[in-house]
Length: 496
Image 1 (cartoon, rainbow, N blue to C red):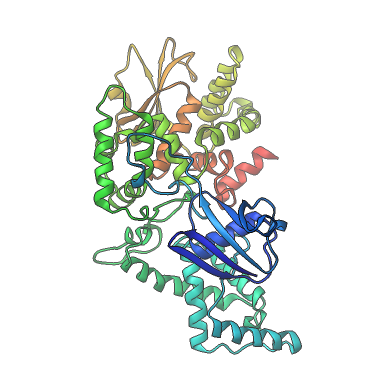
Image 2: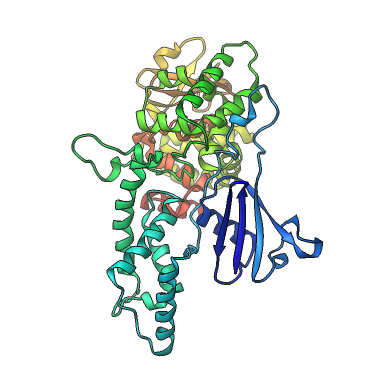
């Protein structure tokens, strides 16, 4: 199939494909991968039934069989009229990014490479003869694959390399390795080396995802690489087309001035936050500033509305929906597991939390019990420096926050209990500084804490690392297949 794809007035691409996509969603993914498209968009096609006028493509069966002209139309749902010059905003939402396709669509190689592969595939089909791949041909294949992979992420994971190697051998069986059980293992290793070299080119070209990992002096490896580790889809995005650091700094200053007003324009702030997303992520990940410096430069970020919006930009998920819905589905089983663990006088602190539900068993308190009890249920975790209570009459907030690097502070009145009866304020604390406050309850406080962790690129507190991993992978279902053995066992025990 041959496609003529109109991306913009100045970019019209010719894309050949083998066969026809099985669905509109698959066509979306093919265009994303081969053209490097980001953001929400719809596909329109020239409909021969209407004299080749453009119509939205909603059913893949409507697409002409052999040749078709498509138009990519980006949607701009995140923007609306405001005093900001909209021509300076990116054409697509920075919160959207390309997810790794499954299966990976092998791109079209150069004409000479395709001819060689076609002949070799024919011989393989005829008598099973595999191709002896010349060095030049292998280099050409790896270059094209590396380019396609880097458009999704410059730091693919192991299963990503495997998916590309499998897809390559499946599409071109002549490239199978003779005597190999899997048939693609050498391609897997070759891709890893090729991506390593290709990242040097990306760094020289100024790719933000790679530039932040430039190191001076002795090279560090492994865990020091700054890349998506908690399921971030948009970890360090490219700046909007046509925007330079000076433009985005000007927008940041406008936003900083707007925040000095008693009643700032929320829509203007939203537009500015979207427009400066790439610069903000570059600063947060590359410079790792102190939280006080971050609040000073990006004051709009530390409000509930923008924490929710930033989390969506980073992960493409709704923070409150994914957290609270996931939590509500697990609360009954978590509480049952806690009850079983407190039999025979064990885990007294956990039993104190459950006792608070005897008199008041509302949904809000059941959520609080499930969250506050989680680190007490997981053996070896210590929540004392992550979750703290503050009596509004007897305690000083500064004293209560002393030594807290990351956590929540629960303000209450009345008798001190494992779950206080009169919680009036929950705050998120980073580096002994309150960054978000006036949160209505414990569950929303934990949700905002997860939002801050993703927005400011923080590591989970070591003393509760399994609890936070459980919240991410089991409650919010972000990269659930990558759970550690400890969390995997905990999930099986609770969901059995």
